[in-house]
Length: 316
Length: 279
Image (cartoon, rainbow over all chains, first blue to last red):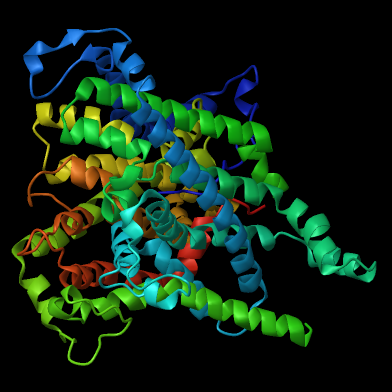
């Protein structure tokens, strides 16, 4: 699930507590503040930090739930196994491919949708309501809807698309299976992207656009020279959140192909090892690798786009 | 706006509507087809002559004990997780927006990291932990992970929202003679309520949509939520997925979301984008 909010400004009142005479009042405020956030911190750490450390620990063991007493320390063997297995790399490539293509397509379609929603006067409420429907629908349901739509047995896609035979089996080979999965993913998450971009679009000043128009800038020039640069932070935040979300892809693949024809993602591989085959050792190693890749992607996006999440609020 | 632009906007608006509603219309249409028509291959969009099943699929689905349990589980688990997570997030967000304390940055960073966390990374260790603690395949076994994963969303939405509240009004009310409690209740609570409500809706969406925890941390209908139940639904003939029944189940599970969207459209949009790009 993507969340989109960005650091509230915490610098507003900073340094106040640094004054030499840290008053009783400031100390009371400090301790009240910590007490109020304590339950949230406790819960978040309980379900993430603790299991992650446990995964790190288990990943060093040869540990299968079907033979728990045979557990023994193997060091980094699990990582070596995973990283030298072509399956791991195939799934990683797949996941990266899905991430890059879906985010790129969503950025373009989402931007067009945002432009339309920004300008549309009639039926504003209807459009805004409809755009939330894909966002709200369970991913599993959208996966089913698209799987049935692409099915050569009961779907309508083959009938509607020209140049494609009515009996074409979309789920018969890799290429078309992955296209079907991407379509479902793009359908479901483009509205989210377009809402973020719409909020960014609202920040572009009309005066500046008007001025550019008076100076004789074409529509295309206004788009590239005025609109897009002013939406930079909104675009970056949208790309960051969607990319990380796309890299975790699981539901759509589980429902639509169950990983057949090599359409498996890294999340799916990890799930299969842990839950279906009870291989906690190698599964934990995969969990750690998955976590590290998400960190790496976040780091790269932040570096490449120079996203400053805290600053995005002020500049945006 | 020139005529050309106007036409563009109208075409765009129609495209958006088709985009959003086509798959929904399709799944509704499918839910009214008979299984026979589907197995024999009737690839039309609308139910064809004689291939319609009326409300039969719906009554079959609603008569299914496992499906009813799953709906019940989903509603219960999502509501409890939402309520608890919003309460805890409200405390935290209030502290973040209003108080000066050490570790403020840490909470926000932690929340951000969790929002990006690959959920599948956690199911292994949680599966193991929950079995040891005896809460595998129970409601708390899902409520706890849902809470911790919806907390970031709620904390970010709420703290962005609380920052906009003019807290000075509370003091102003006190100057005018209200007690601190009165000032808080009469001035701050009404201002904060819409934000809390928005956070609750988004949190509920998240919990209702979850799939990974739903299939990994449950094994029976004890706690299995609706997305997991749908994906495991095989029907009478395991070699032939009951598309029409699944479609009916999908429609039923989507109704609560559609109702919420229709009622609270404005609030959801505000919540989704709050803070992200607002100056």
